[in-house]
Length: 558
Image (cartoon, rainbow, N blue to C red; front, side, top):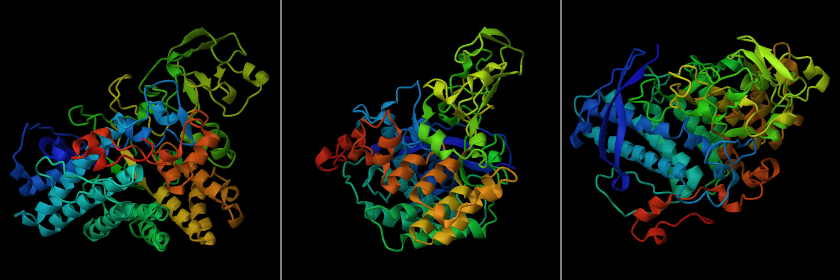
């Protein structure tokens, strides 16, 4: 049974004097949320057993600033080789890297503020927990460990995006302008220290009894990713890959977490607590506590709702048309559709009429009109250039790749949310899967590849590829050492993880963001520059500091 947070709301002074509102609470073995809004709570509340627990849950809530949000998606999906911009939205500059992507960008400012609020909550918990009385020591240690996990997670994301940031490890209880940028090496050292200290005190099982809390495998998965990323950073060490391998192997071997037999079930709505999930971000259906909600459902859709036989509904989604797959994604990543099921199971290729009637055709002019009853196929995207003669035989419109544009294209189906209250609701309620076992395998294989353990890497990749195969095609999906190249490493991650908030960070880790964008993203290619491998420090941060840019310098190029 799903355990969800009963949420209350309180505020306390956060980093750099910002006042934050945090979502906190205790757990309940029920799918229903009991809400109680509290306007203010004294500073000493966190010094009580309940207050300490609530503060930890408040820190968890800041993960919602990144996962499943438009800001998190903009910073990971846009401006890569696999996605470019669709027709809608005011954030296209985050794909094209034009000068509008500057230091006052709202996505980076909001993320910066929210993550530092979460970090300050963690700092307060870590410092105050030893003095809290009336709490079991085991529980105290677990809450501190969870706080170290969250703090490490936030600093890891910030380090990848910005490089050196303010490495603040003590609670900020009053406004301060005494802030400076740390180094990437110091930040990695602290991230690793936090996770290493957290692991022994986290629950050593696949899922917490309070679902959504970090567990030992979640921390090991994150630590493996930290070492994998550090291995190509300015802080790299000779044993980074070996340490990544050790942690990732532990996740696979020790906790009973398993790959689902069917790739399509991983992101199936209602199955968000499946056996492949290591850690997920909790959202709800209650508008009071869902903040901006999980927005991923609106970002990948195409403009189906104005096409013949169709109107907008909750099942097919509210299509913002933000992200359109590149030709590289469709023609290279998913080129083996005969054997690999992940193309068919990652994209929505069929739309059934929910607005019956007779219409003139729009994009498929091989017939003059189409007539639909409810439930008839209205739009089919075969994924290849079906001949004019074959299309003319169909009683529906066929959308072939040569006709794709910024409004009509293949939509990723991983994030659809049919549980919204109506067809216009933006704030989705599905949990967002942050860590899953397939990624553990992919990171392990990558670490093995870069360690020249090619036979091991092949065996690890083949676990993923065997699951991805169509029934009876498993042997055709298996690779050998001769197939193992850096291009394969890059392609295989997108075959499995497309649209799951990884790609920009992956390209940055591999050091080929510029080359890949110039080669595969024509909208961004003319504008991306070498300094775009880091994001700009928010101007609001620099303005807060005594000495401004002299004390807290901007990243080069911005």
